[in-house]
Length: 384
Ligand SMILES: [Zn+2]
Image 1 (cartoon, rainbow, N blue to C red):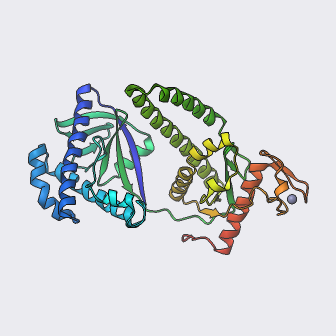
Image 2 (tube, protein in one colour):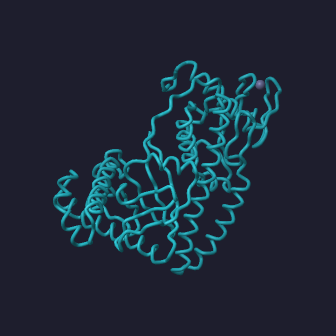
């Protein structure tokens, strides 16, 4: 499986930072030039495009051979992704206006789009420094910060890494191919209920509340409102930065939650039961003020993080149909609308048990995941 390690590089001087930024800009200008050729001549294959633009890129942008080759590859990869998206209908149906518009012009790269580098251009050493080719010559000894885990991964890395600039900071993102761990046969399932008030509640009774998160986001929303009223260029800039900051915050929270869930399942030799998220937005009836929170929380991202981390740990993940998980009693299976007393409480009309509503839901999810696994109804990976 492919995993990514991210390190933040810390250019020591503004000269180094400028050189990196200038390199990204030059790479993207070169990519745009190559993209125009690829589009105009309908060059689909990498070697064909490379033959057509290689010397021009080298000469016009003062690139070395590797930089030119990587730029051509980036353009070809972008077209391949674009075509896959077209086929998947992500630009609308054939003949639609949106699709026609997307197809009518060459792919453009933003000034600061990520640029792939290969090992010859970029080296991570034991000293935690990066040596990187730039348009201003090779920069050596740029320190970077990353976790020990990422460091270990980097040591076994082969192939490409991306240089990315986010909000004036530089990151190196390395893709690492590791052997896929075998899925351990689960001894039961940890059910996870996703929600607005509590982002995740487990069938062990662990609650990951969104109170702190919502407070943070409310603050940001207020700030956004103020900025939007200003309608100045600088306000727009701040707004954009704030939005990205908020997205990073949400991503970080999702990482933390996913990590906790997978660690719990791994420690107790269980699998993880998740709701099938398709249609979660239509399904959940939320008050108006809650709807904003619901629609803006990245449940799909959380789901993806759990799946990814579980895969790495050999933890089985089963998605279940979440219908009636909030109305069914996790003790006696009695299902009725009135079982759910209010947002927080579940009280079974049949057996009388009273439970935290989300906890009850997560227990149902755990049962369903376990049943699905036993039935062999899930796409079960091979277990030893
Ligand atoms: Zn009951």
